[in-house]
Image (cartoon, rainbow, N blue to C red; front, side, top):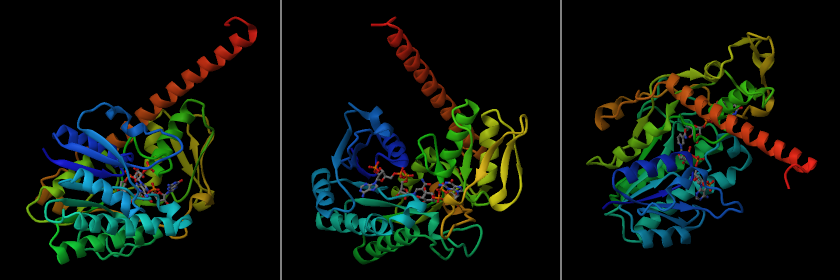
Length: 362
Ligand code: NAP
Ligand code: F7E
């Protein structure tokens, strides 16, 4: 039985990857961090699964990493743990560098120190953010990097240190240069999930307006569930190599917003330019989307578009299993149901409080 260690198992990708590897018969170990609230929504459904184990470790703490490596002695490591929010990296650049750059080194060196260098394969979660202020479109494995945020600069170190350990120590370690991938489990402050939740809340009268930053920004958005298969495929090749993982299809934040609201039953019409642009409900004329300076970044990456040809040819992976339209639909349907459940439990709580007040329920 193969033994996988996933850092960042509580995150969007970690939870999908754990499901995928368990379905392939792996023994799956994941690292978690101590937090004051024990709320691990994305992995709660694994509780009691015999081949699923959790360990405390932090990418900022070599000793915790070495302890887990020695205990688990994995045959594959998926290093997904990171401070993954680009805008947050401008507020916490040092923390981001420690986890997203030095953290990768800690994993690689830990593997060496534990005597696993020739038996353990390592996948590093790299990113299209490396292309940053893009030097060509679309971007492939040979496109020059131009990182454009503290997050991207930290991830660039991760990319190069993986390459260095591969060449210096003959280790099987590779980077997947993944373009944006989203899902119903996406963190709520990333733009896609922020939009699908807002569309669901606005459609059900739980929110008045959605405030966004740069709506002209272009992304190549895929479905996270499809992308975790690639992480695994990358580690099953004969020789370690880096791969771009993307759909090859590009859309703007505005297009994502229009489609998400449409699936929530609202047709939007955008008027105005730049900071004055607004999105109106065509049926009622109500303004539902506005631009806010708060969501602009000091430097923004605005033209990501991946070329997945190498992954298609060498990994035999289909980049278009889930279309952009299907992805938005999956996310909106999930969030419409989530908001409906929240409304219903709120209604029950309010009724119960009223009954208690009137002495109907004791
Ligand atoms: P995510 O949902 O933000 O999950 C990040 C994970 O990292 C969480 O489990 C988090 O734990 C953990 N983590 C953060 N800091 C840590 C630390 N100091 N020590 C140990 N664990 C730590 O991210 P994701 O979307 O699943 O992305 C997974 C990886 O792929 C990340 O490395 C990200 O940078 C990279 N990536 C993502 C995309 C994308 O579009 N999703 C694209 C390219 C690359 P807590 O739950 O405790 O916070
Ligand atoms: O922003 C613009 C924003 O935060 C996408 C991470 O998984 O993918 C992700 O990073 C675009 C940017 O993702 C809002 O300016 C407009 O241009 O959803 P995002 P990201 O920065 O692309 C890469 C590949 C990773 O590696 C990262 O880990 O949307 N935008 N208005 C907004 N963005 C946010 N968050 N919020 C807004 O209101």
